Length: 209
Image 1 (tube, helix red, strand yellow):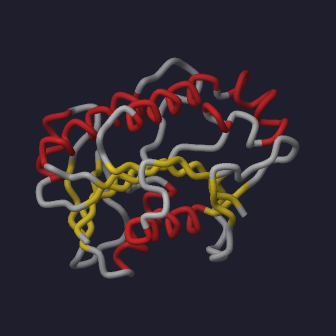
Image 2 (tube, one colour):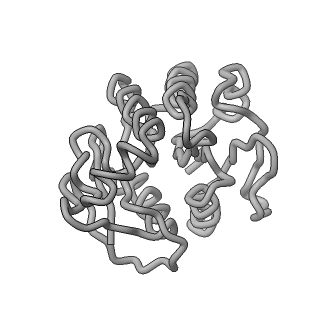
């Protein structure tokens, strides 16, 4: 497929680029500054910013799907980077007739608020990263309000571990007591699988080891 990867220079984004190329997809990476380390014939780097709607059209032209691992630059203050950027993407996808959108968010959001364990539920989310989780909540609302064939992928705490190829997925993945984790490699593999498996179209799914 011809796919656009947003957040291609982040941890999950780099895995999406590498694994998508390994699977034979034609990949366009939306980048703000530095291009991904991978340089392959099937990879095109396009400069753009999700906060600049006009810059998205060149990246979206001719694509069949969009995978987003959009990151958050501001951790400790109010921000709408994720929600505004995702809204701009959704609107641009509509202009280009692209329907498939797979987006990484996180466990601990909305109806999954308890699924990250007590440490995140009672301490990290309310005291350390409240603005981050608030913006992810708005981001998910943007997708649900669209008419795209979206899939919201909520991983547990992300690690840099190697791909195991074994993980749980579903709407109730997680635990109220302990923190669940998953490697970025496995999250990327799951998101790419969903391009063809389409098990969770217009649905939200948790993934964790």
